[in-house]
Amino acid sequence: MSGPSLDAPGSLEELAALLGTATDSTRVVAGSTDLTLQLPASRKRPDRLIDLGRVPELRGISLSGDRMRIGAMATFAEIASSACVQQRASCLATAARRVGSIQVRGVATLGGNVANAAACADGVAPLLVLDADVGVLGAGGGIERRPLAALFASHGGSALRPGEVIVDFSFRALDAQETSGFAKLGVRTSIAVSRLNAAAVLALSPDGATCLGARVAYGSLAASARLNTDVAKVLVGRRLDGKALAEFMQASSAYVDQAIPDRPSRAYKRGAIRGVVVDLWSALGLEADAARR
Image (cartoon, rainbow, N blue to C red; front, side, top):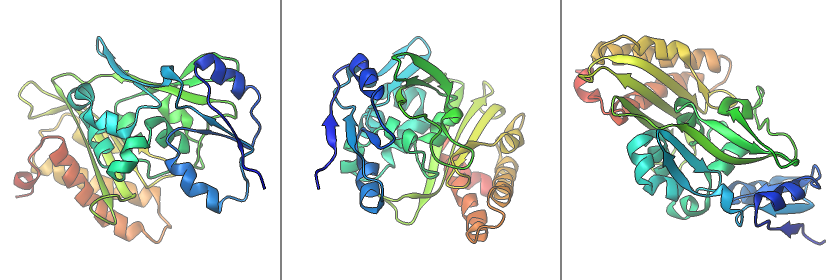
């Protein structure tokens, strides 16, 4: 049995032309870390692979004014080591450092992580709290910008249509009065798929003691990572002290009850998320240990 054919376009124009001839069995590949795991268990073999690795427009990390752009083919190693991501979107840099092994981070891409649409994808919650939008290339050659949440189907999986490919992600880089963080729980201390993950962006008062605005997202609970405005409201207008942390933990546990009311893992995750929130509090630069005392 012959394997799938392979195309490697060298530009967006070539990529769009190939997408126009794609079938339901055609697969677009970036780092291939997910595809390599999926193919052995799949009953539907791809007829063709379209490799994105030679398209220069899909690469790069840049900051223009207060707007950051990350190409879909940026690897997690590149994101983790980027000075502008570390300084202006630290939740994403932290998440990138926690993805897989060194070898996986060297080839796995942010675009692939999002397009695969796994509930545990570590890149999604940080992008949600950063309010990222996504450039999507269609077979006609045009690039449409969409909110990140629009890329996920309500029942799980990707909402990208056949013949569509992620080009890049764009968001407002955080300023000096904002802080962000990411935390996850896996079955091991490294190279672990998230059992839970959480990200947050907080706008702080000039003295850093009060939360003026918040965006909070959780992964590995619903069909895809999602923002939770109810939990964010617990923090807004509050001094970021031990009482605020306790209420943040309680609101997060309540969200587990809401998100997976009938799942056997509910009791475990209801307690585990409290630890994730404490780690997230520390990642935000807040004194979690002192606050708990």
